[in-house]
Length: 140
Length: 140
DNA sequence: CAGCATCCGCTATGATACTG
DNA sequence: CAGTATCATAGCGGATGCTG
Image 1 (cartoon, each protein chain N blue to C red):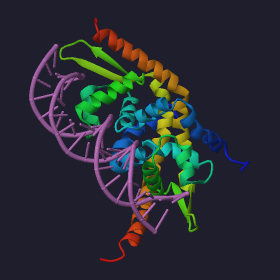
Image 2 (image 1 turned 135 degrees about the horizontal axis):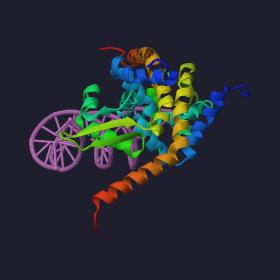
Image 3 (image 1 turned 135 degrees about the vertical axis):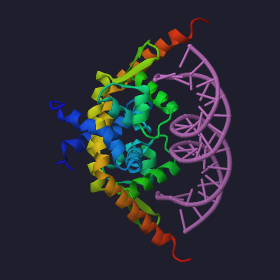
Image 4 (image 1 turned 180 degrees about the vertical axis):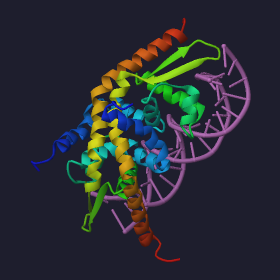
């Protein structure tokens, strides 16, 4: 138990982290970066500030509603900053805060893992499904 | 703009990763580690193999249904391995695979960030909500 | 013990239309 | 342009009871 890697040692505490810290807060933080759009938006905004419609165009599939909600949640958590320029037509700029930027590294690690391993996962899933099919669908 | 950290540079590509890689696969991978129980179960199982009921007891709030489903998904992705011992009463052991273990580091980073910053997040949220309250509830 | 089947409610997300 | 309001829906997740 004393010669584990540091990463492993730290990971040991992950189960505990999930359980011993305020579980609700912990979950809500994970939910934030785990939801459907936050990760992409953080990645996009980390390259520089962007406007609402710009984000809308840069995020295929997102609706205005979800863009608004996700941005609001990110702002509420202090991860992005929203700046309104009272002009006509109105202009609103979004950017990642310094605090939000500290989230970049961990999020990047996960995103990279996902990108690096998506082929393996697809293969694993196919293998699993075929094995299940062999057992379940004996005929016909 | 030219003296960004490496992490930042790498992060620049995250937006692209999300958009240019197979978006469905990318999302499904993120959904896996982002769902309600996977992270906790991976953390728990990474400390060693465990049985079904053991996991059930160690994961407050989870239902048998969700434990089964989450474990199945994790198994399908090749992240955990399920071993059945045909005894009486039946015994089933779950453990993290080598592949699943590679997920430990990135997941750890995120978990640690969440643990380290949950106080900040709570404070940010409160500040945001109060500010919103000041604006929205002028009177009454 | 280790699951699976069923029912069911809630929340996340989407579509659409309207506003300052 | 940058949202808000409303409605509809799909899937997640919980409760419960049954089975090998």
